[in-house]
Length: 287
DNA sequence: CACTTGACCTGTCCGC
DNA sequence: TGCGGACAGGTCAAGT
Image (cartoon, rainbow, N blue to C red; front, side, top):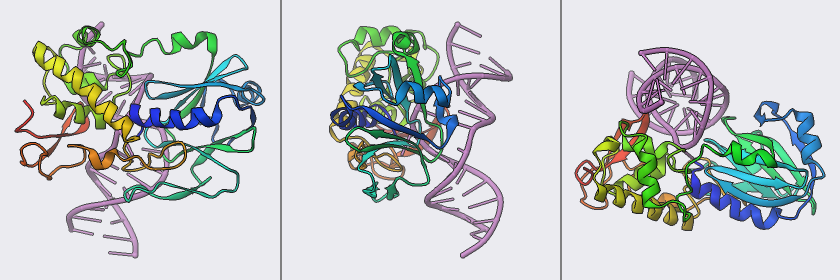
């Protein structure tokens, strides 16, 4: 679920509602989802703090707190962050493929209570996600290994070329999924970008010509921008900060479309495995 | 060092 | 309907 477009959508929803709020309470039902501090330290450093800022880096949400600590939330595969009024029994989901549940539910493992009374629920079926607390002064080091943000100015073609040079022998798909090359791309948008750029995911990075690389650079940005505009992809558990589905699922070109006609040439889309991940391509259009 | 694989969890779907 | 197996968007540590 949550790659850059999904996390960015959640960030926008939460920024409006959370910025300037004070955290009145913290409930943790699964301590192992906490990182970087004990449960007791979490309470000391989070409760009574004000939320100064809600930003995003790669696939993580970044909440700067007035206590001098910053909360990093990673949703991994099935994490959800949903804001709701207490007792609202908000229905979460909505896409035909996504399960619809009320929140909180049995997968709600962490809850924040905010000034004004609303609650922020963290749900995670697979329990891969986490909340990590770091001193704000140490944040740059914590995030240092991440590559450039693909939708920011810093992501120039020259920089893309330079970071790819380190991964010359792997497949281009593995390189796109490497968060130190470029931050925020996951399996869905890697497949979508490679289709737009007409490149086979198994191509060795070194084999890419300058024009192919430039095309991929443009494709990555175009696909991500389009997905952000669609408020992300919901095909399983992703919902935005208010529990609603994203609409990119209906706009996707190849991901999850094995057997369906290629939107370009109408020949069937094929599913293979590249870099250990399910991979969707048009073998005719992608070279 | 670069790269690949397995582990972390639970749910869902598909075939028998 | 039940049961086993494969698979699922992410990232580490451990292995080659």
